[in-house]
Length: 421
Image 1 (cartoon, one colour):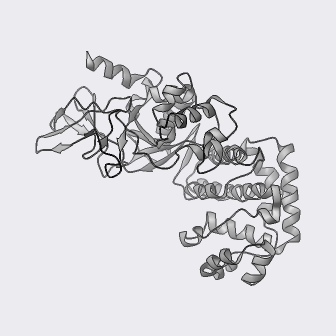
Image 2 (cartoon, one colour; image 1 turned 90 degrees about the horizontal axis):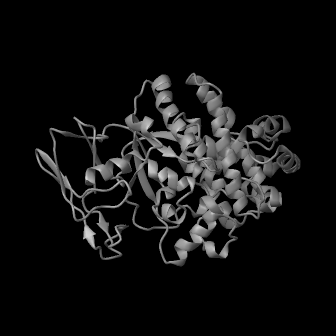
């Protein structure tokens, strides 16, 4: 099948096909006109239930319709093979082609087609886990991540279940044995994010000192700004001397304390995470259930997981997420999001850019929440933030592994209040 015939059967325009041309030969070599095994009933009835998504009775009939279309349309079958290869296995030059949802072929079930592509990752994940001597339950955790994407897709498609093609690449981290879902959360070893503060721990009493990075600019409310776009009210300095570090402290609420300056003696203070050390970055799959108990168990189990299976003892957990925007605690003080913020050490959100969090709630990259249905307190909170002219923000946090047994006690905030007395 040549590229023109493929495009005609898939109803792709000439501009899309032209972008496929550089990788076309490689795609042909890794695809077929035959129905993929991962699109057959025997496959999806085995793997879909692991996702804990919508009822089988809702999903399986749609998958059967997709299967019939693939049997009758060789180009669609080849596209399924191509997506499986490109999104889950191929080099990044193929991954970054303009892959698209084939609505012209599958209609309202195009998201179901993409969900079936996502499911095709699960045997690949299990194969890697077997190499690592991991129990099968960790593959089930990846399936639950896929289940969490169904609601995100539905939010943008009038409740129609499916999977968004731009999320599929995330499964590669599991296929490669880099990322693992352990309980409610996912974990990926990584280096200290430069958008996090400088964090030191006292060698004697284990207290923390959290300092602004040099050059961070803030407005009068204590939020970070881009100094090229907005004149800052305050710009922090972090000064390193042979025997000391001096800087502006940050409270566990995620705001700087510009009227204070802290000087640390290097003999007494050590960095929480040196540049050559890895920390466990946290990623939050879609779906509810981010209760204090579930999060505590996930952190505790993750520490033991990496020690047991990889012989690694991580000292700190970190996360950059829209969920750590301090605005959520203000808008939803009794929510699980707010309760989570209270348990960790929040760090100053990044300067405003884009619409952080909008995709995960509305299934679209950006938009105006006031023009969307308001059916939850979180929807209302989005509207309130935008209504008062405040940008959505990416926030950050860290949590020390040695403090896990303190999780649930608002440990860092209590320690901060004690230090102020």
